[in-house]
Amino acid sequence: GQNIDQPTEMTATEGAIVQINCTYQTSGFNGLFWYQQHAGEAPTFLSYNVLDGLEEKGRFSSFLSRSKGYSYLLLKELQMKDSASYLCAVMDSNYQLIWGAGTKLIIKP
Amino acid sequence: TAGITQAPTSQILAAGRSMTLRCTQDMRHNAMYWYRQDLGLGLRLIHYSNTAGTTGKGEVPDGYSVSRANTDDFPLTLASAVPSQTSVYFCASSVSGITDTQYFGPGTRLTVL
Image (cartoon, rainbow over all chains, first blue to last red; front, side, top):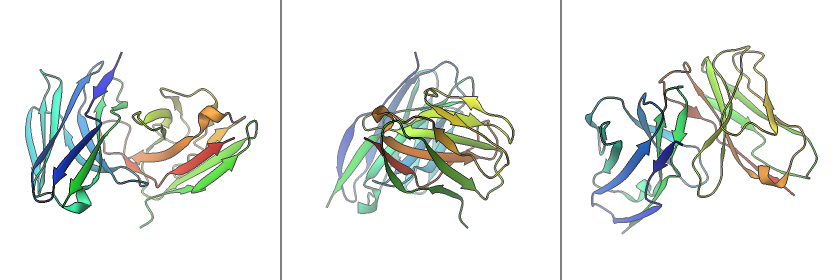
């Protein structure tokens, strides 16, 4: 079966750095997405990786290793507004997105 | 810019009743999707449409039907609601059905009693 694993919850301090990991086992691979979802709101796109390596976008970076079935989202200079759930999703061989359950990130002052 | 709109925002429905959740996008995206999101689970695809006039089944299609008469609208119908269909429903769209970013509507919170 297809599976996406992420930690359920993480806590970090304002101004610090946090890394959210995602491991996946899917039938085929056509890219990995990270989305942010604030409580009660819709998911919004953060990043897309299809090749190995690090993609940096401001305070957020996303890394992919296809051979290891592994990705992480790195958030720097954490702000209170970063408190949200972070969803990892992999596009499989049928071009359908398989979603992880999400990691709830709690930022403390 | 509206993007994607969904209606209603929330609804309480008696079991056995039918209901249509509405979704409209103004981005002229070809592909549209319906997901449900339940606590502790990832988003699960119910149905999708890669282009107007075509639809396909996702991971959890049973009890739901969709139509795609035009590019903008993608309604989701529950013919006879059951309590297990209590969930938050998100509609999404993307430029094409391939590796494009999906953009989500605000969601509909449905409770079936």
